[in-house]
Length: 339
Ligand code: TF8
Image 1 (tube, rainbow, N blue to C red):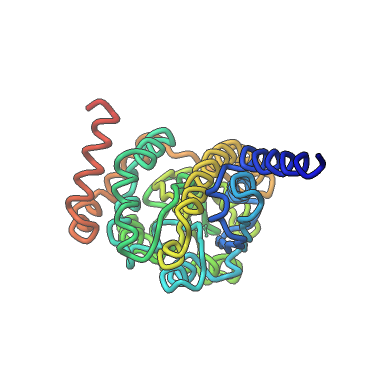
Image 2 (cartoon, rainbow, N blue to C red; image 1 turned 120 degrees about the vertical axis):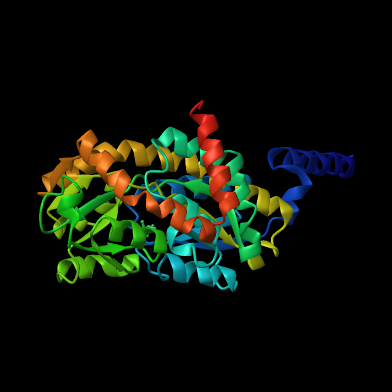
């Protein structure tokens, strides 16, 4: 009679639940609010990537796993936040590789000037065997890399003069990241290079404590450097990727199902983030022009001269980065270029 009907209905309801969600594994997923920090503003393409990653996680976890994002260095800069991950007091950071070379010297390979020729090459290296080789080393440093996202090719800005070649850089006080390869590169270019955390750059430019800095155009635009810089040179002198890092001590407390969701969704976010970065590239260039920045393109000769000036950096820093790491990168690039 009625009792039997209700048993059948209960069974049916259970079967439906199991079908709608992804089976028994869902039981292992807990309600989690994961903090992710970044040094840039939410308008940066990283904002698009975090949004896509958040939606993906909600989708795959039945709404249980959430990201709470902190922008503009609200939880500390790239390096401070990364240290918080290593000690297990913060879950995630999206950071440039460059400020982390003190933790993982191999990351210095991405700081070598004029390493990648275009975005396609960067994607192939980062999403391929080499990217995995670097990611595999991160747990040894208390970090788990979920994916490589994009900051972009870096360009020089300053408040003093249009820079059309190496001779114009001479004597400019240029902020560089806390990274010896960048310090050396800009010293070789004749700049007075000053290492500084990203969070201090705007004020230092505004007060004239420094003349210039270097970052991709989307970062220059979304960080409003156009308000305090008059000249932009499209030097494309380095492509330093973002890593989407998770705290290793906290990672080890996650269920494998939760780990898989984070890994898959960081890649979903990556594709959205890179597309936004490339779409916004042209728009950002228009924005900074509209804000009054004068944009200078380098002639092939000026570019060649710049490459020549920074060349010694490769050999000088190979031992610190690890000769094996540098050789592997060069071999991969050769393969990609069909050389
Ligand atoms: C730098 C970096 C930074 C980014 C950003 C904080 O110049 O390029 O702009 O890591 O996410 O320090």
